[in-house]
Image (tube, rainbow, N blue to C red):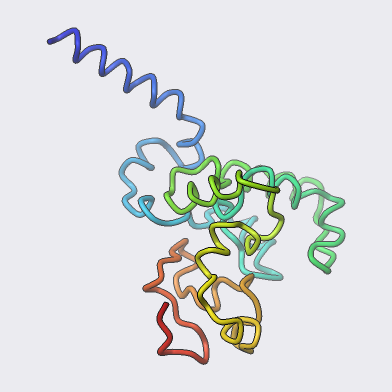
Length: 188
């Protein structure tokens, strides 16, 4: 019996070590293990430079909303020259720091449940360049009438997560935190 417990403990330790790269996206494995918000959501943005540079133009999307490949394609000097119609060029060192942060916290490196679902859905096809192109996110929004998004001056596009997701900045995207501007009584 003692040998069995020892083998199980060794197996568990090995699994934890092998999965360390995923846990590394969180501050530490212990931090992940005792962070009960991880069970559903996306890790909030914690890097001040990332938050500052990205939120100058739009909502600072959590890196856990896209896989690593997407961030590597989006955050290049060439790609930022025409970043969805805008010039978002950054100093080389700033760009590298932002890329490093995004890659370290990408959906496919996160233990947060919603990020894991995004990573799985993004692996099913092409590498998405827009968060609104991620299959999981498209599916979650498919029942919302277009008039409530594109036809709504308070929203305009799915890319404005924080317009409807009242706790998006904290990485919370639960349906019960949604308030669609100009449609306060709508429920999915």
